[in-house]
Length: 365
Image 1 (tube, rainbow, N blue to C red):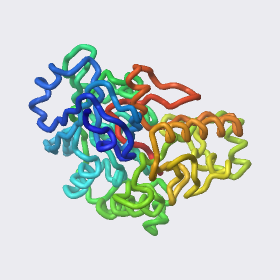
Image 2 (image 1 turned 180 degrees about the vertical axis):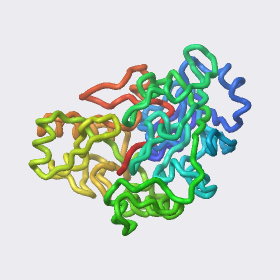
Image 3 (image 1 turned 90 degrees about the horizontal axis):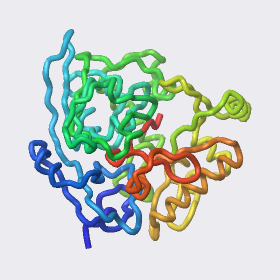
Image 4 (image 1 turned 45 degrees about the vertical axis):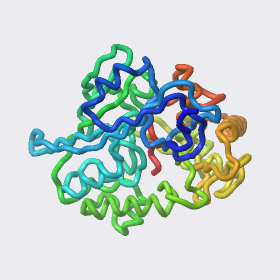
């Protein structure tokens, strides 16, 4: 029996993998890649993964490479390269400690650096695509390691080619172009301004901005706790869904929020929609599956939970929201069963296939 996937995912669900390899040395990738199957399942921190109870009949690679290096960029900028296994929170802390602006509002997002481009990680008005200039990835279709410029990554709102071409690429490192600056970018989110007791548009000191983001995320139940009833989770389980003009008008008329995202799409609040169905923090959704004690949009696994029960809870919520509002929710966690079948993103019913290299990275704002 192989290693349990439950030991490598934050939901702590999942059966054994036939073969599990932990990749720690960036220079060893060519040798490792040569012995891998065409499409290995690549895992970062496991914080956006729903692994099946039956496990995985194949090879799983855990990306655990670490390291951050800096070089001088053009026009006084600094280029920072981080290995794929580096925790994103550590990269943010590094940039803030060195007085580099560009990702300070990503503070507190769990997951690895290699996962961030997959979902185009973002929060509080910043996205990883804003600072990323290039990344190194292994193309499993060609068997070659390639350097992709930002434009080749096809970034969108919580989207990239790594999501729409699941299993093709394994991200090995990313390079960001950051700006030496004492102060953070202007605050554009009202609740963050209120948390820091400053006006919109204020540019707080970098460290103060990052600390304020972490505190605000913690107050709203957006951090991954180390223990307690909400510890086994993957964060927000649904993307905020796109809505038509008429759907947006109906949501607003009922008192719900509708916002435009970076790609210009109108999106309703997935959490608000679930609350309209009567779900509240702490609601039970199935055997061992609950809404977190802090927010409806985060589902948690507790005693006797299974991946099958978790998947069933997600599917029922998708159906209930579509029945009540005609709006289609798209689940965020990577379902390994769908990935293994090589499917792309699917609409209701069922789970969305994201990318096997992604962690729990998304906009919690």
